Length: 210
Image (cartoon, rainbow, N blue to C red; front, side, top):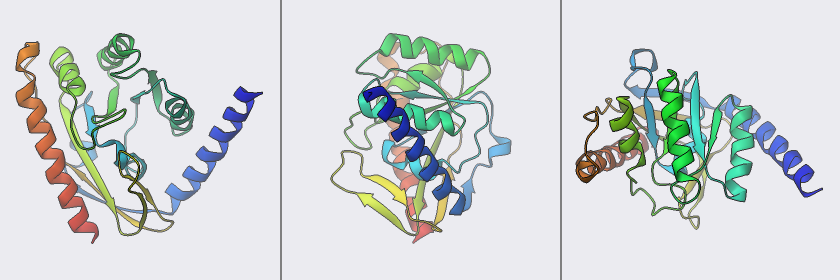
């Protein structure tokens, strides 16, 4: 019975989300989707996932947490056309990394909330950089902001949910190429670079949407 209710809840959330997303007006800034290299790793802050659903991203897989919230999110993301890889840095990490590398090797893009699954907010974890070093796929940093949104300031990620008919600004930064097979001890450099770039893009998106 509990599983049935979760499926119903996921269906309702996905339906509401799809209806909401269709009302949004989108402005793309920075790198154009059609010029980006593929496969690539889209990197973004956990709290910006909702407005980023309007970013064109065919053939994309996403890593989702094994928590109850993560499983609900996974069901919703599947209805948006994402392939879901179960696992996170805190649970199921090795399997998630193997699955992500397999999808990249097959030519699929990967979407990663780089400060997830539980923060701290805007602090990039090394997972995306590790995947880039092992796969050779570049990292494409993304951020987004809305003219009108509900902001869940008490949640760890400051989740942003656009209001109906809001204008969404999505900013794509230049691809970050990580040296292939970079030693683990050297991941901090590109990790810090990615964190700084995401911070810059977040400010640019907010300024454009203001």
